[in-house]
Amino acid sequence: MTTVGIVGLGKMGQAIASMLGNREDLKSHSFHRISPENTGILKSCDVVIEFTIAEAAPGVIRQCLDLGIPVVSGTTGWHEYNLESILSYCKQKQGTLLYATNFSVGMNIVFALNRKLAEVMSDLPAFKPSIQEIHHVHKKDSPSGTAYTLIEDILTRHPHYTGFAHNPGGENFQDDKIPVTSIREGEVKGFHQVAWSSGAEQVTIAHEAFDRTIFAEGAVMAALWLSRQPRGIYTMKDILNI
Image (cartoon, rainbow, N blue to C red):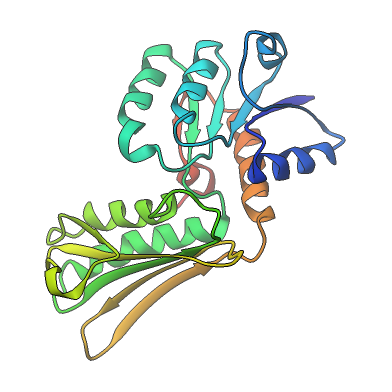
């Protein structure tokens, strides 16, 4: 029987813990944080899912890698500053890591479409991109981690763009920056849209989440998949073959 650990008991951690608690084929342990008192229980886990906060996530990942435990990281807001050092640390420890900015199957399909569309648009300079993301008022990172993935995938595939402008004003807007708008309102679970406009027409791809359980389900799917893999570094693209 696979034992799954959950580190971080915010909204997502609690949703995952609740989901695992209803699975008779799995065991689970939940941790607010990793401490000397609970390391023994942590070591009994076959895989760990961490949903903490941006400031804590790199340390939690390192602790799991130090213990030789495969770890799924779902925390956002740390990739743009710490990803390369974490990937290097994982290789150094010969560990097993899966990281994602979004565990929704639908959003990962949109990621794939976004990459392909950016490649197509690199030959059609009349079309200009823009990104909009909307989340609940409690979300701390802005732009969202999902938006950062959309941005980075465009930047690596479209030679004209060198960065992004967050909530830009029209008077100082630079043509080589992707305008990104972040909105925080109500209890919106998550909406992301990429639009390419020529002025005369527009191509749009979008994803909207209606229930947080899609993220919990995706994280559990990723953890069970990772527990069966050889050592290495993985993303949702490896699970979904996209």
